[in-house]
Amino acid sequence: MSGASPPRNRRDAVAASLARLAPRLPDFEAEAALARALASPGLRRAAPETAARLALVSYARHVFTEYDDLLADGYDRDSARHFVLDDLNAALAAWGAAPIPAGEAAEADEPEDDPH
Image (cartoon, rainbow, N blue to C red; front, side, top):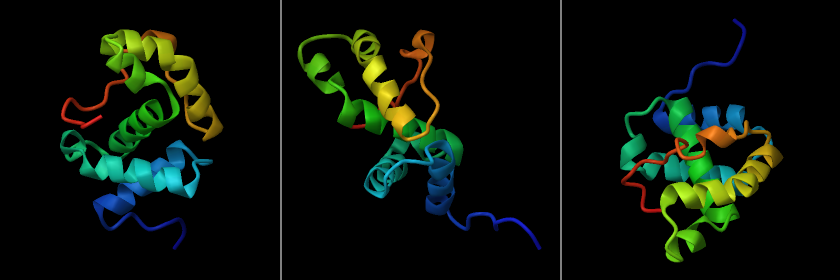
């Protein structure tokens, strides 16, 4: 028998997806992104890979960019996402994750019911 066995629960499945998507993500950030994926009502029915990617992007956007400050200053979501895209992609690249293409910044959406 070769290869790893499939994950037994949603937490394990999302964690495995997160590890594949961002292989250099530090443990602390991985736990925070995983918690975000599991807590978000909008991600409960998403495929593990989708939940992991959206949670990773959302976590990086809110923690490693000025996104929340721009929203507080009155920028709309699409404009704020445009202005933080370089910082967001730098965080993703540092973790070994794929960047968000410039034309897709607004579409790289997090669930509407995400508290952040």
